[in-house]
Length: 220
Image 1 (tube, rainbow, N blue to C red):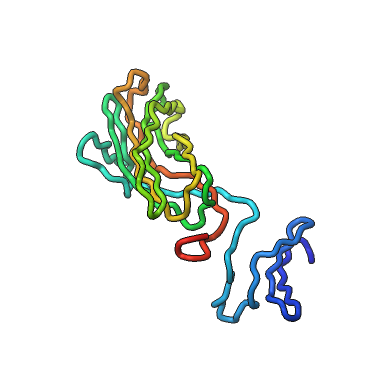
Image 2: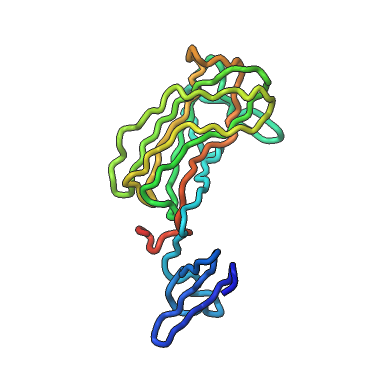
């Protein structure tokens, strides 16, 4: 086989295999019948990556919950709307996230936020993050609090910045697990010395994926 080639191998009395050559190695992806013309048995059987890949589990700011107390403000920005977290306030948002069926079970994930700063002043903002992570069929544990995370101003107006807030241990966690979370700028903290709003553009988790889905509705 040539580098990059895909090939169906069918031996007498044995199921067909879909093979792919990468470098000097040939990898088998599934065992089953050749593809039908209508594609109804496309990717028959579980499909796994040889190595995990990273992807975003997105939580758009339009999907967060504002409780009516200590809310950030919706602010017009660049033709859209962002959530502005004020200095001298403790603005907070709440959100949930469902871990997809492509997740590499048991792997750690990372939570981060995307921000923009409306002026070029130096200074730090201080953030708190809580999360409770439970598998389907399990009890939600008490929330874990990650406190006093420092986000430094880039001293660059309108720069799109990504800030890692916390890594979450994934030991024992499975597909279709759920996260209940909150994110707060602690603008009254003594170390919060960026004297302006911070615009939250999006928040999300980096998760490792090892498949395009699961073999069944409930299990890899």
